[in-house]
Image (cartoon, rainbow, N blue to C red; front, side, top):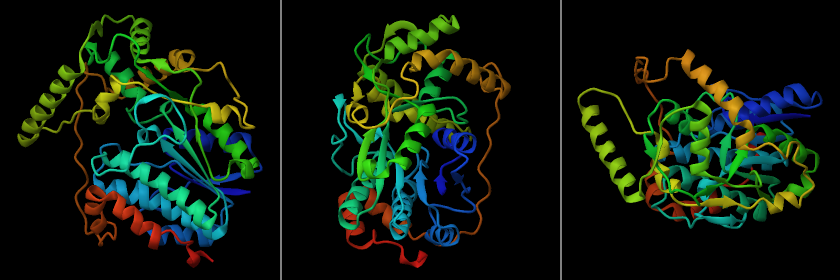
Length: 382
């Protein structure tokens, strides 16, 4: 049995590759890099599926949170749907990793809860939401054998990017958070253990009929109070900051807007800087969002390590990342160099470019167009 994994260099993809290489000798999983298979190139997808004929597809690739409309649409949405079309042509399972960014604030949210599709959504949330809607439509129209896994705040070691929970940890250790950017108590969030994801996906592959056409929340059963998590990290590191002064949301919002303005001024003077991408979700620091995992509990999947939580894993995560960041001289006590992007080269026309403005302004119209004309099986593979 062989499978295709997209996004093998990321946090979840790295755990998946390690799991299938070490624990499942009967399953061969390949994870080509973007030079061999780019989600932005339909010909790459068709060519790969024609050559290798995988037995299943796992897609956990995403663009950076701050990506523009074109990249978000081309990779997060169109690339994911083209993978599904290829899986549909071969009639093989397609497992897609999605995000709680597609959901509103609230407690005990179910798999049916999601944000309305609207142009005002950020590029990341909009592209992930459109993907969820189209995959469901493809299942109903063509019988796509897909399973969608929604993740919340993901934690785990061996992530090369400073994002999500790692950004919080980095800012606390680097003393970049002098005060508490949340409420004193009651702001709860769900967390997802990246180390457990491979066990669930392996179980899905062995029980594909049970999980086909379904959405699941893959989160720890107990939500976490953000203030408690911050203070736990502070206590573990024996730090004096952040101080227990809780900044109200309007003040935090105004401070964030001011910093964005300052950074724009410095960028015009030739200094390269930006506010962390996570600040896009500043409102989430003050609002609860917890996902129900009742549907997963009622399935045939059994948690391989039910005692593991963000708090039990925190010591090992801190030791791993602090050591790594020190080696890379990332803390403010060291000088860091800014690397400019490579020189622009001659590029061919991107077919997704003309659709990016529609993605920004009329996502529902674009979704209807795709559902009518762009989700049929890729018969070229056959």
